Image (tube, rainbow, N blue to C red; front, top):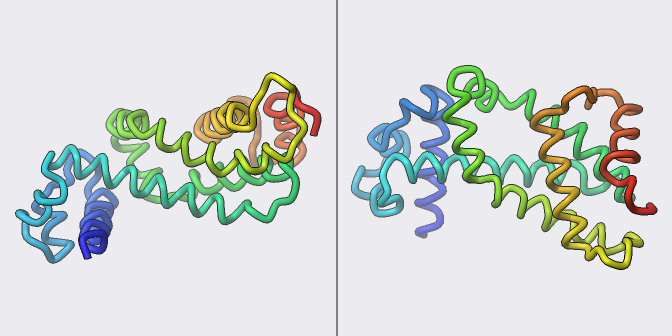
Length: 187
């Protein structure tokens, strides 16, 4: 039951963020939208608004990357998987209405929240990639978890700031993966 209540509060908080942004989201509005009392929200998030907003950002980030993992899981070999993750990830970031709204209206606040969640997000991606990289011949001194950590950082970096790479162009994405992301291993 408590997981259901927590989920209900996070959904309501996310709805607040979607409507009014990070800075204007309140415990009171999250309570109202969830149909719960303020006391209940504080019972689950005793740190108040800061903890509630952090948790909602973390919750949505996990959902975002879970959807991405589902979208790319049938891609085939590690190169195809990473190419699909880059292309689908960039498309998902561009098409995420709430993320785009907050990026335009409150970029500093969002970046602080995402920086706090960076370790957890990297962990999600690393955990997803490790089994795939365990099946690839890696240099002797590199473990699958270490390779997954590097690749996860590269994927996240390119999705958030692709630089000169056009992540909508399949040929450019293939070159990026072959030369920059996986060029150090034989796949």
